Length: 315
Ligand SMILES: Cc1ncc(COP(=O)(O)O)c(C=O)c1O
Image (cartoon, rainbow, N blue to C red; front, side, top):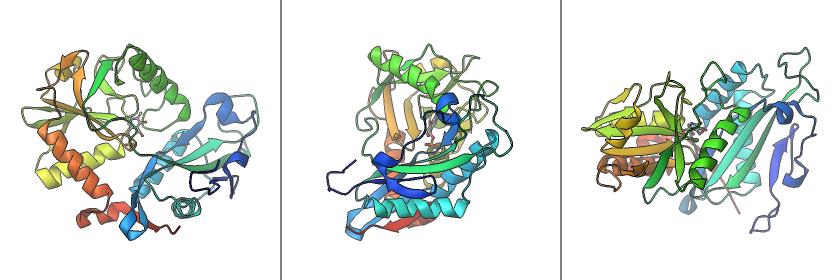
């Protein structure tokens, strides 16, 4: 693939950087046959006047990737430090001078028919690519979400706190149905009928000045943006977040509602199932959190510099 700049893009695969078009897998690969790979979505923010790109909470993403590997019996062939180094290297090699999304993947590379995960001498591998990414979903105007008829996976069916590629069929079905029905995205309920999350984002609501989000035992992905929101709300706004199970109709009567995730960032929701949320505009607290989040990820709040990995990118 040639980017507009004319620069051939590379991906890291099978232990080396290769041109993207050569970064291909054998169709017999276990991960392709059975969805047995785990991944992360990481954002890096370009700061033009400093000639550097800021990778947001890279360590937390790789720590979650390692936890996902553990759950899926995957042996990541690279150390934590090497994955961080490769993250910086690929941003430099691809001369990423705009906001960028990074996708590291650990996958079961065996060429065999059999879903068993833990064979002797099993081969697991790591790959990584980048794509330019501005807005993943519209965060400026409010979203209209629909409650999906697809239920969110239960942790005893498919590990929900691991980012397993096969599990995204659940997200894909919910998102597709929502969009075909005229909504911007879906909210998935757990099998027990409580609110879990969006198709690939966590959810917060505001009621009477309280910030509430489904707890980590509500079949959610333990989102890094969710954690960022919890910390910013507490440290910058003095608001403690309540993590608990949420009923469907609490969404309808919420004063404010928003989704959050690495790709999504913070996206206000102003309608659910054709009901206006609050006054139908982005809520004041949502706006404050959205502004704070942008300042943090773009390196404008020195207090949170430890969350940023700084990578110089020269043209
Ligand atoms: C299913 C799901 N839930 C929530 C999130 C948000 O997680 P994070 O903030 O770590 O990106 C994501 C995105 O990674 C996701 O795929």
